[in-house]
Image 1 (spheres, rainbow, N blue to C red):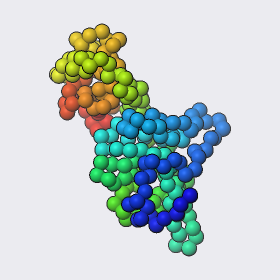
Image 2: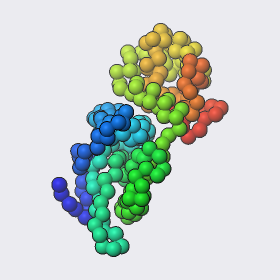
Image 3: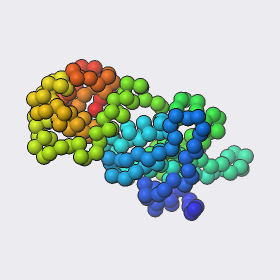
Image 4: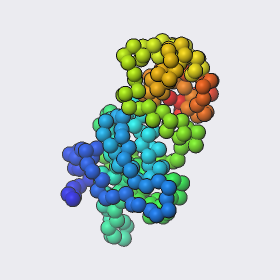
Length: 235
């Protein structure tokens, strides 16, 4: 492991290309353990240590500002006011299109990690602000939004675009907002069409309200459409 001054490392190191500096712990009794997330942004796998982290990876993987992702690629060390050395490994790294980056943790609830995590958050936030980056403790998503994003994420792979003519048919079918099933039927056989629709929704080529449960009568429209009930969670 190599140690560098933080400001120098931020300029010189491609954190998105690094393996985790420490393994994600396996906690007995938990229903979800460490695993890998296939990123539609990069076409590579990203290490994920918890269900909460995987959910935040879904959000970042779908964010058009994000160009790369990594799990636990860096450990930060500093001295506290008493001169004691402290360290922290943020769970997530995301590179943005402008070259800046996000370091983030993904607590399952606001107080997760206790006082040590909160003190580390302050130190890491200051270190990131010093170089023009951002640190955040990402709050858990609303259950409905999380469920909708996980569903669409199942169709993120390019194989779900279908045959070349299908993409054009899907966009034509939803050139004006209409219920999901009606547009799918207008574009062809729903069994073939629906994966392409969900793929387009994942990539924000089509739009719907993701803050309400997805169902066959959900309104789907073209990119940029702002329908009734649309909020920041829309896609």
